[in-house]
Image (cartoon, rainbow, N blue to C red; front, side, top):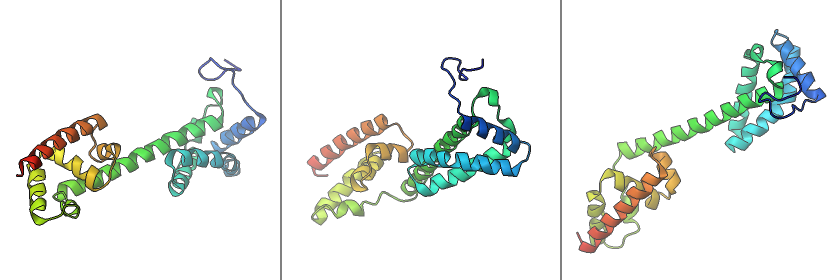
Length: 198
């Protein structure tokens, strides 16, 4: 319906600049490189701003901006002016691409952390530095060793590598509530073991 947004609920707010960019993108869809240059000049800055807000990293925001604008050039023929302004369409693409990058980065960090945890025994030497006396070290090692991996690994990551609950949960690809529960259980078992002196 003319004059309304794509959801049909709110009046569409279109400016002369929106109309100009829509026209440029339609021409770009026909292979007009000069028109696409105009689209790029108009929309790359807001795309960059959105990517920067989502990613909080200048270099990655620049990469996402370039990826999005290349995608716009390649898929310009999919733009439908009757469904909304080119600006909205492009910013929707940008938001999806930025969120995908956030998820990709988080997944990569989680894989790296899991790899470290799985390939190496937890680095209890970091624990040892905080414990005075060889006998106390042996007791701590022995008690940590008695814990199940599901309890020991989150404790080591949180208390000896400085990760927050959320970061531990992300690294181990587990819900934060589950991690908190495992850590509570692990601490209870560790305390009982240490109090028993074995």
